[in-house]
Length: 258
Image 1 (cartoon, rainbow, N blue to C red):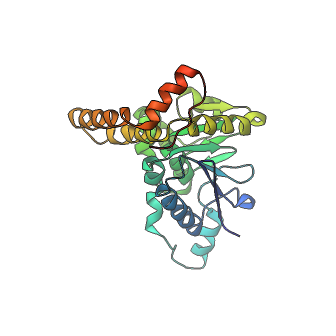
Image 2 (tube, rainbow, N blue to C red):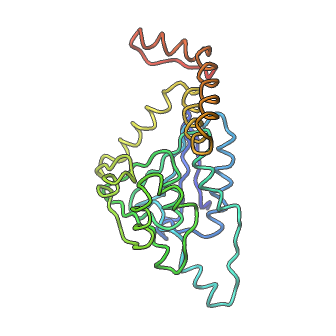
């Protein structure tokens, strides 16, 4: 059975880590499979929203320490696929809006992936932890880069240097997650969130995400030039005309992506 389940329906892609018996803990093979899935999604124009989540009660408990320890005991080198370190970049920069749907444990590499997503929704049973120092490593998946931008450098350093479990409410208070919701409302809230996004004008949605990505790397003058050119182009799109009509007629837009 595949370690990653993937499907696309109505513009929403669902990528699910499928190792519930191990709390969705990661092997290199699992992460490699996720990389391939996300790479393909990043080139699929049918995907406007992508949800990353885990099967069962947990998002992802980080690395499968038991599997790694077995290799250590056997004197085997840990096999690494260096492409997996680009997963955070794919989540952060792909044209689709990415959502981390967090239930249960979210630690280690998965913490970095959640921070890399555009939005994070967490169930009140979520327990979020960097956890890297607990296993003798400094961390991966660009967690400090993303986390510093979400919660500030002081809080980010605290979360890495003093690892511990954060519940959803505390994570929401510091801006780590966008929404903390009761467990029994989680699926409904997630569905409402994806529906709201996928109903937006697709060209504008993708362009808006690109604006944020470009803003992180460009100076103000360069960014303004890019943003204004993109804005003017969208003003002449059929989707923009339809959005105006829908607004005036008080109905959902019927967008064609043109």
